[in-house]
Length: 532
Image (cartoon, rainbow, N blue to C red):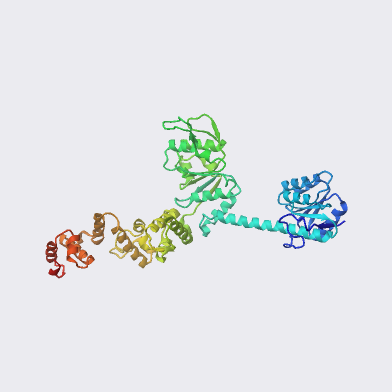
C-alpha cells in the first residue's frame, strides 16, 4: 500500500510537499500511529534510512502514552483507528504536546476532514495512495524543518528577551558581569534576594530587572523606601489599615504586601527599619499572612521579597540593630553592586544614555558632551554613583542651549565640589587634590566657569558680593569706595558705548554729576560738551 499527498486540499499555511523548506535535522523522533502493520512497517523502514528514530503504535491509547515520552517531533496519524473517532485523537495529542507536527493519514479524500484537521492544528494531510516513499519522506522532512525553524525563532526571542532584560543595566564592564550572571540564575527562581551597594549604584534598577526576567514578571512590582519613614506610617504602608484604625483613617487602605501579591515587593534601605517592625516583617515572611492595622482578619499574600541596603547588615546583626533571623530570611540570595568608581569604563555609555534621556525630556537637540566634560566625568570619583551622574547631566541639560553639553553648562555646585574656591596652587606650589586628575586646560576652564556661573545667579546684591569675593580674596586687597565707583562708571561707559546721556540715566544720576565724578575719579574719558 502506498501514500499520496492530496494536492488540492492542503491545510492553510502548510508547505508544499514537493518543495523542501530545508534539510531536516537527523535523528528526529517520529511516532507512527497506524493500525495497518504493512503500512507502518514500510514507513518505519523509509524513515529509519532517513536517520529518524521511529516508534510504531496501533491504538489511540498507545499513541497518547508514547507521545508523552517523546520530545517535540512528528506524528503520522491514521484517522481510522478502532478506539478513536474523527479528529478526537489529533486534539488530544496536541493538547499533550502542542509542539508536535501531526500529519494526518487517511484513505478517504474528504474535504470536510481536511478543513477540520486544519482547524484542529494538523500540519499536513496525506491521502493514502501510490507514491508512498517520496510523499512521506518530503512531508516528514518539511515537518522537521518547521520544528527547526520554530526552535530558531524561539532561540532568537529568548536572546532578545535576555538582551532586553539587561536594557536597564547600561554596562559592558567586567565588574557588572557577576550581576548579570546572578540575574540569569534568578530568572528561574522565586527566592528572596538581598541587594547591597552604595547609594546610587542602581539597586532598584537591578531589582526591577530581576522581577522582569523572573516567573513573576506578569505580576506587580511594588517598591517602598524604608528610610526616613516613621514606624507608624511605614507599618500602615506595608500592611494597610481598616477604616477607623486611627484618626483620619476614613477608608480601608491596601498595603504594599497585599498590592504586591503575585509579584515582587522591593524593600529599599531595609537596614533603616526598626526592630519592632522587623519582627512584624519576619512573621509575614514566615507564613505569608498578616493583619491590616485595626483589623482582625488574616490577609494572605504571595509576594517575592527583594530587599536592598547600603549598610553592612551582618555588622548590624552583630551590633544588635538588625534581627539575625530576618537577615537570613531576606538573604537567601545576596547580590552586591559595584560603585561607579569600579566601573569607569561604563561612564561613556551612561553619559550617552542620560544625555538622550534628558534631551527627550527637555525637548532639546542635545547629542552629547564635549571632550573636556567627558574627561572630567571619567576622572571624577562619583561618590553619589550612577544617580549623581544622572542628576548632573539632567541639570546640565537644562542650562545647555547647544547640541553639546560644555563646561559652562555644568551645575556650579558640582564644579565647586571639584574645584574649591582657592588658588590653583598654595605658597609652596602644591596643587589642590581635585586638580590632580583634571587636565590643566580643563581645570582652568572649570575655574572660569565656576566664577561666571556664580556671578550670573541670584539678586544684583548677590552677584556684586560674589564678584567682590572673587576679585578681592584677601583683606589686604580690599578696594576703596573711589575704586568701586570708578570701576562702576567705567563698566557703564563701556557697555553704553560712551553715551553720556544713557550712562547717567542708567546709573540713576544727572549728567552733571556724572561729569563731576568722572573728573574726580580721573577716568580718562574725555568730556563731550556737545552731548549734554
